[in-house]
Length: 332
Image (cartoon, rainbow, N blue to C red; front, top):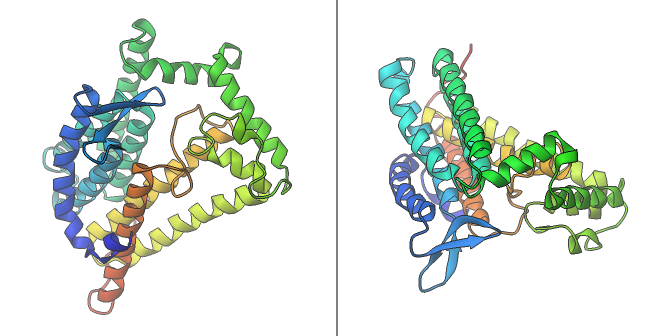
């Protein structure tokens, strides 16, 4: 985070291109299970780095790279951003490639990244008609993937799992044993926490709940700190989003504004999904809680992301007296 903060945020415009180009072959290696591919928690999302023998999740790099690239593209194409051929079509290719490569092994991450790109396009003044067209295409594609998963079970490794989770959420009576177990243990943890009852380190459900250190860490927070601690943690993420919006509003360049908004929205959106899963508002997705869940690649790229936001803040403060702010709102 400190190192990323010390890099001038304008340099991330070029870094975005390199990171995006590096992400594609890494995702392909993961997708086709070439040498170095690793299966963890019944998911093929990791590569093993030789020599140091540590796992690495390429989708974390790809998420950050795509957000930076979309911010860069929109900032550079502001003059023609509403043009279909010059401002919209060229933006679809990297989004489709990255989301498509992530989709097979991690459907929830691909969907979240797609929504994040839609949000950036809206803020970046892309035509609402074009955004609506993309949303419609995304819904159709999602329906087709769901249909294929129903008609051809086993065609995609994680698709069957995701479909069963969605079906279990919509129709609890049809839930699988594993799905029911996860949700039930999470609810027990929340019920034990009450308003503010157990105290730090006194969780019992961490011994029964699958992945209490990552996917369901918020359930443990609610068990140990109660609803008071859970609401406080929720407010912390909202403060992060609010401060990032302030940073974006103060930034003199469109790229910096879009970068801060895109990254912060990605972190907070992921946090909301994780919390929603813990309290049974959403189907189980396997998303970690940024800056709270245990994780190797996840915590590295989360810290890098926050460092980039701080870099935008530092750059804005150094130039605010020399360059007037330029509004970036979609509507005025």
